[in-house]
Amino acid sequence: MNTIISTVGTSLLGKARNYYGKSEVSVLDVTNFLRLVNNDTEASAETNSLQRILHRLQNGESKLVFLHSQTDEGRLCAEVLQSYYSGRGFEVECREIQYLNYRESHFKFRGLRSLVNELVNLISSEREKGNTVYINATGGFKAEIAYATLVGILFDVRVYYIHEAFQDIIEMPPVPLDWDYSQLVEHEEALKWFSEDLRPKKEAESVIKTLPQEIRLLLLEEEGYVFLSPAGEAFFKAYLERLQQADTVPLLLSTSAWKAYQDFPIDVRRAFERYLRKLKVPVIRLKGSDLTRVPLGCRVFPRGHCDERIIFCEDQQGKIRVCALLRHSDRSYERYLKRKITCPDEQEFKVLW
Image (spheres, rainbow, N blue to C red):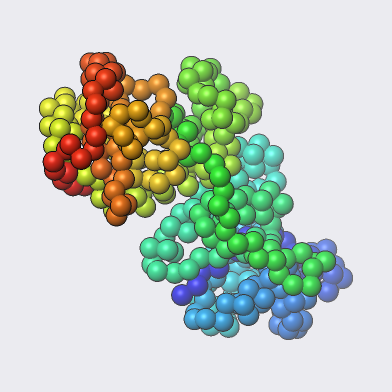
């Protein structure tokens, strides 16, 4: 099944007002307007774009999800669209985006972040059901359209858009966005903290000082609070999804790495486990590691200011082989680099997860 997520604006309401020649119209008026016009192209931006998307897909059933603002106008339009498409046999669902309203502070602080989170959750849940997800970013505030498109790019979802001046719908296919997710590895806990709530500036200052400029760009400061920007929220959620997707990738440890892992105190072992899980993600593994001089062909992960160092390589089957688990604090990393070791010297590798 296809799942089409549509942002909803007030185009339908505006068309109905013009049709009846009055500024106030009821739900019944707008419902009757759709029936009387009987033309999806003319009825509203949402029906116009959906008609064209559904025509393109044509393969299998489609479920429609309408995301509307926390306003009376947005709610009315979404409910009428739900009734209209339900009557045509579609499975339809409406979701209200909290704080997405005409109050500027709500809109900036929480509204767009709520939209990003709702889109990400919907994409994840619908894919778990085996559905193919599409985003119809035609209706709503201009900022909604922009962030819906960004989420589509980050989560490999096709995004559609149509403007009244266009004769046909524009398809914006997923593109490989070259953003270095490995930068998030070292600062994951800080980003999680900012993602959970608005943080008072005084409370956040000590955390911000630890972050590089690239990570600070994902934060916003407004009215004495610091929080993840909508774009920051989208990038962080995409990063977490990549970690989750990599859970099934096998990770092999050498005999010596196994021994070190088992001998570590529990807190050190947990620290290594966090990095080992991130090592499974291709983009993080590539951009978050450096070539080492020895052993030949291996890389060291992660980069940056941390105690833990993982020496690894990839075999011809694409499996990740961890040759050594080392630390700066006990000088094991420095000692290892002085030894002339090659990967074949390790006799056995066994799967950790």
